Length: 133
Image 1: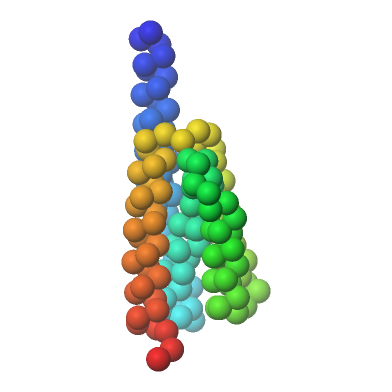
Image 2 (image 1 turned 180 degrees about the horizontal axis):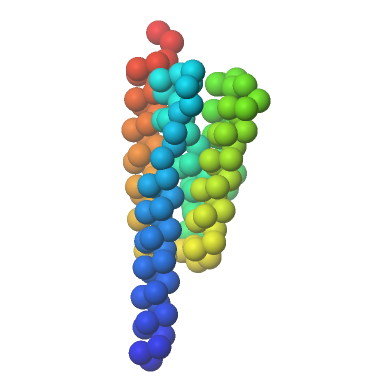
């Protein structure tokens, strides 16, 4: 029993560390990028994470996060290099969370809640500050 509890605690800690690492990796803009580039990179990370975690936790929204990423790319019409950077952020986030979260856990639900809130804030900020009138 003690061994099971230790393994469960180790998995929970690993999940928390992975979520922290994914969130802590700076979404750096490059010289010449628009002022909202870092926000777009972070938004791509969030969409990738949600694409893995939401279905894992039983949400019926399936492919919507990939569709939102496609819509973001279409709206931005980025250069091939910028597109590659955004897609890499999406995929990196997806893969990082998929390595840790193979089942829905309280930690996964917490990440989902945080990502939904942060993604909403980023989207509102980008649109209000840089969107067309």
